[in-house]
Every structure is written in structure tokens, then in C-alpha cells.
Image 1 (cartoon, helix red, strand yellow):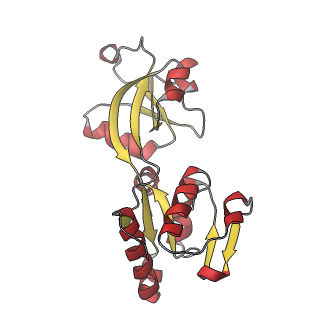
Image 2 (image 1 turned 135 degrees about the vertical axis):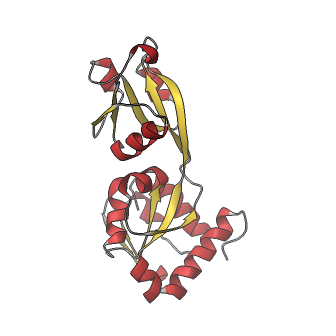
Length: 206
């Protein structure tokens, strides 16, 4: 699982689904957390790395944002929309930016593949610049004309003087499975999927 908000919301889902996760679990700074009672081991990583761990079988299952799934294109099964950590992908720029006057705009983003695919579908030729953090800085210092990034409340854009120009797609976190693990541990994984699905759909996980 990713650290941070997704982890907190996914742990809440698992508890509702009947998994006995200890209270101190939430505050731990460890990267590997063993929960013998639930017969589970949790690996905490950067969001972009979750599908990689699952693809290589280090983890049987994982929780990853749809944005990461599109960007990484890993060989995993996406089996359930957990409907947590809801946000959306958007294009933003300075209020003074004139898209009609720009022939080949520069787009800064953490998601080069996703952004390239989107603008290709729009029939717009752009130059993609990959950054790893503080995407909002790019238009402010003249590195890029627009940015593509995740938006939750829009507060970060507003505080940096940027405005949203296009809404691209909604993003939620997904439950993903390693294909080999699914064959080897089908019963256990299917049970987990069913329990989580009942919680997501508003029923009891028990």
C-alpha cells in the first residue's frame, strides 16, 4: 500500500471488512508491518511503486490509484474500485496563459505517459516535461506553460496562483492482484475481494 491518505482509508476499509488490525498499526513508521492475527503482511511504499511490487510477486495484492495504474501499465489484475481517496486529474495554468497563442505548449507533470495520451486524444501537440515534485512551480518560473496533476480540493493550485483549465478524469484507488498469486491463492484472494466489495457497496464486511 502507499503511505499516507490511501493507507489510512484502505486500513479503515479492511477493518470494516472484518480484518483485525491493531490500533498501533496506524502510527507505525515501519515499512513492513506484520499482522499475524489476520495472516497478513503489509509493505508500505511510494504510490508509483505499488504496482511494481505486485507485478513482481513481492506482494500478492495491493492498493493503487487509477492515475498510477494508467501511468505504470504493469501486468496486474485490477479487480475492484475501492472508491477511496477520490480526486481527479486536471490541466492547470496561470490565469494569463493563452492556449490559442501557443503552438506547442510545454506541459509539466509527474505523469508523462498519462498526459501524452490525453493530449494525443485531444489532437494537441505538446512537449511533456517530467517532474517529481512541486509541479505547480513549473509555470511560475517559466519551465512550462501548463501542468497536469492530481487535484483534490484545488487549494494548492489556488495558493500558487494557478487556475484549472481542463478536467481530465476522476481518480480513485483500486484493489490490484498479481496474476500468479490469483491462481495460487484464489480462494483467499476472492474472499478478500468479496469482503471489501460488500463494504464498498455499503453492506457489512462480515
